[in-house]
Length: 301
Image (tube, rainbow, N blue to C red; front, side, top):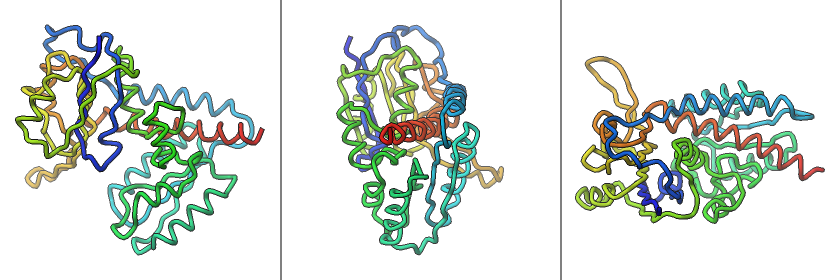
């Protein structure tokens, strides 16, 4: 059976719109399901990190080394980097974070990355996005050596990913791929794929999403996907994440693109926000770091 896959996202953001072709097996077999099975990204990520910890402990020589670069003082970026570094250390990966002022020039950042590319003690490089407006993200992503590009954003890795070839794939795409597989789906090359934009007229968007066996939303538009837009039994992957601040309660919470309460009564499988794609993306970063180390060690052999 050929699955129908819809991906909704920002067309300029590869992690939001990269379609993963999937050959459907079991995901949508139960239309009578009254409540979706929640895909636990935290549990799956912990399992992957436990496996990586064992793998790293068996490696000969130095531990894999991950260097991250953070430009500016964006609070959310600092939080993300801290979480990634804690997770890396937990599996035995050596880490280092380089902090640069917001005024750092593109030329200086490129120079730093060139030096890290040449440093044999650095196995993996991650530049935390977004960058200040005066720095071109595409230039920076393409500056990182492909074998050290653990975010998978270098044009070489993105091209191989699009062609289904071995490479350091983009972490979010890997996370989505793994989560779909965990439900019994079999990602392959047999799917009819449609990519929409967050500004696609709602009436048109709804007509497309309702035909999707697998629906992936990555727009950052809270509550965009309602229960009336989802095919009964569909697998819904919510990549979107938005911070909402409640002035009255003086609290901030994270919500996704999907109306969780409503869609959970229609879908067959559903990822939560938080606790779905987010922790899996971090796990895939660590997986790429270990893979990058192995590829470099193999090249020395």
